[in-house]
Amino acid sequence: MPIQQWSDQIVVVDLTDDPQFTDELNSLTDQLERDPPKDVVLDMQGVTYVNSSNIAKLLRVRKAVIAQDRRMFLTGISTQVWGILLVTGLDKIFDVADDTASALTSLQMNRK
Image 1 (tube, rainbow, N blue to C red):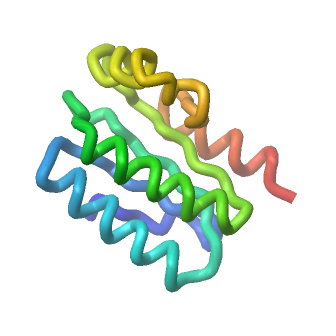
Image 2 (cartoon, rainbow, N blue to C red; image 1 turned 90 degrees about the vertical axis):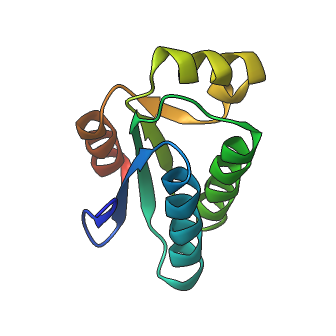
């Protein structure tokens, strides 16, 4: 299952290319809006490209996470996807980690 409840406070989502990308982020956004606040780790290792719709979905999830005073990490970003984030300037607004374990460590160390 791509959306995993890693702990009471952290959700990990394994993303792949569309149409699953869009479906998973829509499900995640719905979950974030109805459940208690959670930190989010989006593992993008299976994503080979992103389009404007994908970027809009990522920004929507980020907005929902930040509204709950939580954090979101992108991990496992391919060179091609990283290039798109750089060109669009989105590398400056997303927290990025090399892998899921690093993101989880950062979230746990910085949580009160």
